[in-house]
Length: 157
Figure 1 (cartoon, rainbow, N blue to C red):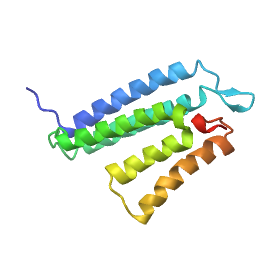
Figure 2: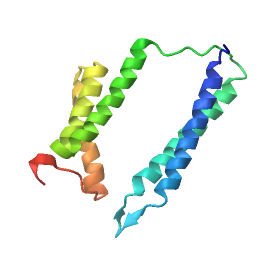
Figure 3: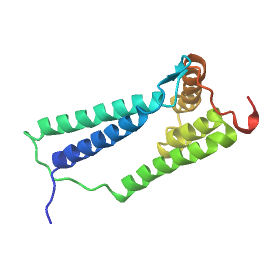
Figure 4: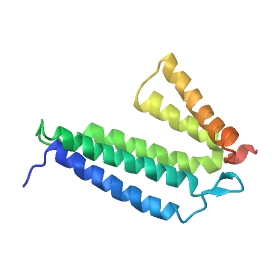
């Protein structure tokens, strides 16, 4: 069985990320970017696809440049790393499902609390402040600044 080096894996992942970003970009360009002066359904997917594509390119280029000086073997993630990664994905899925029930702010608050206090165990004043500031900042960015209507859930408007 062929063993891959760390830079080969990173270059491959960068290429996969760029391909995914191109697919999302092509799909999102079919949606309205703006509707009557406010961001439409294609706004965020387009911006995220561009950011994702740039991230993939940066990963591949940096890994290629570093490949000249290093050829360390790829180390598969540990069981703990896999569990932590799956926990993050499950938390994001749960928050997406919760947003229509409890609203944007409470779903974001639960997600931030789980990630910062639970998963990262940052039970400091800064951690607690982050749990409050991140959802409020996201709400202010989307609702107040961009004028995007956000779900209020069972609590009304």
